[in-house]
Every structure is written in C-alpha cells, then in structure tokens.
Length: 166
Image 1 (tube, helix red, strand yellow):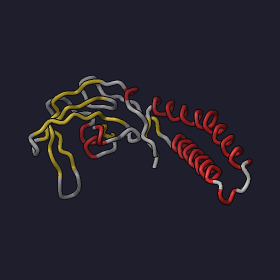
Image 2: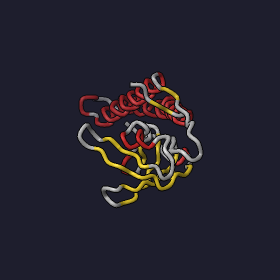
Image 3: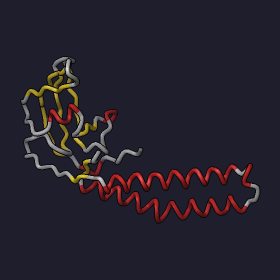
Image 4: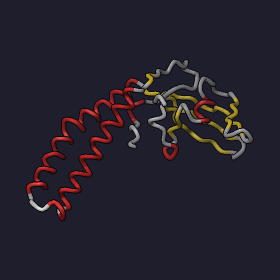
C-alpha cells in the first residue's frame, strides 16, 4: 500500500533516517564493540542488548526508507472554507448529542486518542471537501452509518504533530 505523505512528512522521515544512520548507528556500534571486548559472549547481557538495539535501529531505517520509496505526495487543495488536510474541524454528532473536534491529517500522523483523524479513515474521507453547515453521512460498515454536522473549520499548523512510530 502506498502511504500518502505531505512534503513535511517526507522531510521529517528523512531527518529521522539521517539521525539514525549518522548519530545512533555509530553509538550503537561502539557499544557493541565495547560489550564484545568484555570477553565471554554467552553470558554477556550488554552484548545482547547492544545487538538487539542495533537490529531495531536497522529495522526502523529499512521501514522508513521503504515508506519513502513507496510514498505518494499529497497536498491540500481545499479552499479556505472547506475541510482539508491539516485543518481542524468541529462537528456535531446528532446520535450522541455532542460536539467533537478533529484535525484531518495523513495516515502516518493519525492518532484517534489525540483526535488526529486520517484522510483515509471513514470520518476523514466523509468530511473532506465539505463546508460549515453541511450534514455529512459517515459510513462505518454496510449496515451502519451516522450523521455529523460541520460546525467550524479552521487552519492549523502541520508542525505541531509528530510522526507515529511503528
């Protein structure tokens, strides 16, 4: 599956790759060499911990590089009064008689606990390109959907979110 990323997402991922390669990798390799120099490797916890840390770091680098290789760059082309990428939306959920505020983000930034809703989630897809006052039906599955009314749309800064670690 191709990951949808913004240019800022790509920059942050590349910065993490560079940090892991240029800063963490040499530190980990030094720890590994120090632990190996202590002698008997069969009972050397420091050696196994450094080896595991090296594997995790290399795995994360490969994962991020693969993500960038398969990424599709997306941009927000929504108007100022439309729901779009990196906009904060307040909706009224009729079924619950409650208002909720969400920020629409790329899937890599999605975090429902922090109300960061992916553009690929059912709610995110349903809200895109709609305006204040619109009633939007959010399909959950074949048998169930619910309606929300858009109460407010405002621009927010893309920088305030962090990329989710896998």
